[in-house]
Structure formats: structure tokens, C-alpha cells
Image (tube, rainbow, N blue to C red; front, side, top):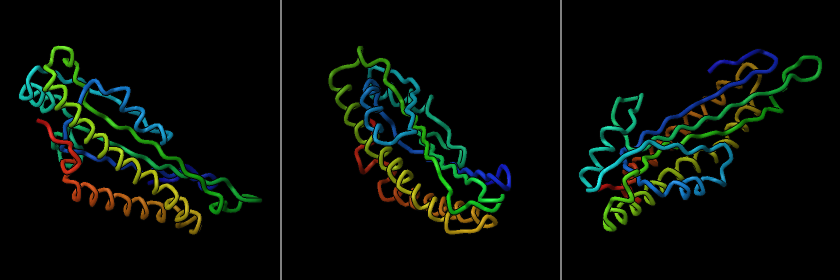
Length: 196
């Protein structure tokens, strides 16, 4: 990624995580509370509907998100971003040893808007699925947020000329770890994120 200037460089890395999962609906307030320990995390929703499991699945499939990396439909989508910068040092020298970084993420989940019309059995199934989806998404947020300290350390231990490369190398490691997490959890399915 690029620096904005030599004296006060800023670099950002964004990683998109597409999940082949479905998520529940009216647990919206609970979803935000899952992520409150992580400042900078925003939860957004797209609406799905149906009064049968098959209708809900069809709605998710029709309205789900498209992964920009492979074009596949996903039921949930998480993006995270780590941005770093450093101030100029004394007399305009490099201040990379005082670099700081910020973490932010957006978790996009489906919301079942037909919940009031759905049967108790369907709502129970949806809630169980949504709990598994939240558990999985939280794992992505936790891993990326924990990587913030690693990115800062990589940038601070480099030179002004190599700082962005060092930060981006750490981002690449975080991305590989996220990919491994998805493989280990079958994109959340092993955590209960299966619908119907």
C-alpha cells in the first residue's frame, strides 16, 4: 500500500473474509454486543425473509454478498482494516519508531425480517445458526485485532524505507492465518453456522 507522504506516512491493509455461511435475523442487538470489546467494529445487516427453512435459504442465496476475490456468494462477510502511520522525528527525521496503528472491521450479517411470521421451530433453528455464525465471525475479528500489535511491532522495528513493506508482510501473515481459521472451521460450519 502507499504512504501519503514521506514525513507522515500512512499505510492501510484491508482483508476481506467471505464466509459460505448463513446467519440469523432478529438477534441484531445481541450481534452488536458480541463485538463491543473491539472498538472500531461495525455490524451491518442485509434483510432476508421466509417462513420455511427453504424460503429463508433461497432468500440468503439471492441476497447474500459476493466475494470480490472469487465471485462466490456468501452469507456473511467480514472486512478488517489496519492503518498505520508515524510522525516525523526531530528535524524532519524518520519517526517510524513511534508508529501507531488503528484497527477497524465491518461484519455484515443477514437479518431475518420475517421472524414474527416464522414458526417457533424455524426461529430456534435460525437462532442456533446465528449463534454459530457470530462465534465464527468473532474469531475473525479477534484474530485480526490481535494482529494489530504485530503490525505495529513490525513497522516500528523497520526503517522509513522498509516500514510499509514490513507492515504489509505482517498483514499477509494475518491473512494466511485467517484462511487457515476458515479451513479449520469449514467456514464456521463446524461452529454451528449451518442453515438449514
